[in-house]
Length: 115
Image (tube, rainbow, N blue to C red):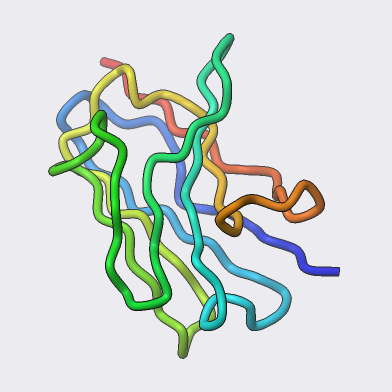
């Protein structure tokens, strides 16, 4: 059973930055396309970044140019660098495979952007 654990969230002011990390109990990142997802209160979960096996990352329009997703296969981790954060980025952030597997959802990490 794979367990994914996200970390790095917190409270930040608009315009600030955070780096999220995702670790796995098994080495799954090198063989899989990984995604960063978020769910804001009252909204459906959405994908914000897809980190392909090649290392290329594609982004949702809402975060393109501000977020950078990348992987470190040696560290068995994926990351999401979030810059120029906006209040609308407030959400719980998760990592999972692409497409996501129900059993792989971790607890997520809360990101709150507020002054």
